[in-house]
Image 1 (spheres, rainbow, N blue to C red):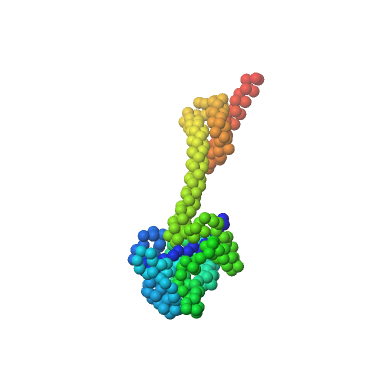
Image 2: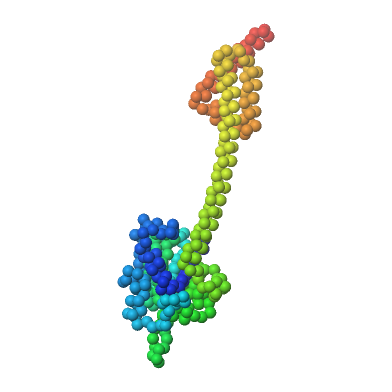
Amino acid sequence: MAHFAIIRNAKYKLANLQSVSRHNERQNAEYGNKDIDTSRSGDNYRLKSPREKSYEKEFFRLREENGLKGNLRLSGKKQSNVVCEFLITSDAEYFKGVGGEETRRFFQEAYGFACGKCGERNIVSAVVHMDETTPHMHLTYIPVVNGLKKGREVEKINCSEFWKGHDSYGRLQDEFHAHMAAAGFALERGVRNADREESRGHLAVEEFKIASARQEASELRQSVSEMQGGVIALEKQKNALEGEIRALQDARDVISGAMVDEYAEGAKTHSMEVWKARIAESKQRASDSKLLELLKKFVDLPMIKPLWEKFVQSQSMEKGRDGRGDRNRER
């Protein structure tokens, strides 16, 4: 099974930051996402923590501290995108296979890649979620570009310019895969989709989770189908064994009935010919059901074997008496 180095990007306006912050930092009492297991939230860890309690306040703190410029529309209908977020992951099976230590190294390397892409000082938060089905990192950052203001170089917040350029999202995938491969991770680059990468960019975080859930559901359906096939095969085997058991029981009843008659009525009640006929009947049933071997095993059972040997001995004695009588008559 192929495993991929996955990086997605989402863009947020100032009004979105409160809900993003509460989700990423696990500040809610309850979550609509049923994939979150809050009993495991203690396993989550941060590669960079915000100083402020909310991403909105941390945004303003970093903008002031780093002297970031930019003509931002922070209210009204057409607000500016002020923060972006990388969602970085692979698939659940990959992380299970490599183990906890290598999983931590994966996210540490991915964090290094993001620092080179957007600058560590512009990162609002980087948190790894281990309390969902697939480990992943939310890395929230301010998109900063270099510009000129009154003839001097400045850093400004501008999401459009940060992602400006044909196939910029495609290059992000290429660069991320190359970085992770160079770090020793046996991962493939995601399948190229020119239309999606050029016109839509990457799936947003929630879209990616929906797509991942659909993929996992498809794999689960395949597993269920395979299990159902196994159940059907076992059911057929069970039916075949039940048929063999019934045939064996029939053979047992024939032999047991004959033996009961022999000891209840005496050896002379049934002649050798009767015994031969009954044994032939048992063998025929066993042969018809391919159970001759099972019939032999039945005769060898501890409870049956003494009776069978006694029967064979009595028949030998009877045959001996018949032989002496024949010789006497001949004389």
